[in-house]
Length: 141
Image 1: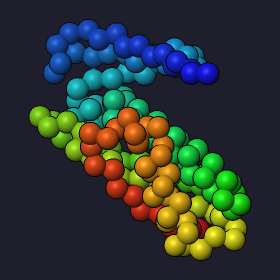
Image 2: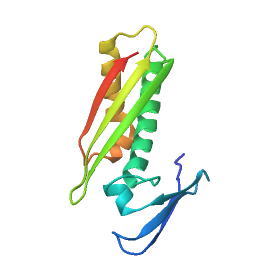
Image 3: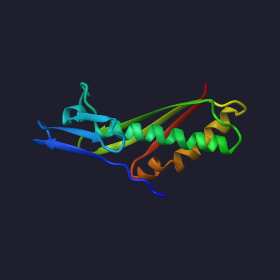
C-alpha cells in the first residue's frame, strides 16, 4: 500500500529579503524557518531545502542498507550516515555525498562497500534524485 507524506511552506516576500516557514504536516514534528540567506550563505538557525533533502537521503539510505545487510545474513549493529548536499546559487544542487560508517559483525570492508553501493542505487530517495551526482564513502567501524 502506498503512503503519502505531507509538508507545506508559507513564503512571504521576494526571494532575497523574504522568508518562509516549512511545516512537517504528516508527523507534526514541527515548523522550521527558511530563507534565501540560510540557503545560499549561513544557516543562522534556519533550515533549507538542501538540509531537508540531506535528512531524507541519509535516513532512507540507512534504512535501505540495513535491509540489504539483514537480507544477506549480516544485520548491522549500527549505521551512521551523513549526507552532504551541495547547493550552488544559479546552478542548483550540484551533488550529494553520502558517508556511512557501520558496525556489521561478520562482514569485511569489501562486502560492506558493495552493500553500501547497492543501497545507494536502490534507496528510493537516491532514485528520486537521479538528476544529480551522488557519491559515497563507506567504512566499517
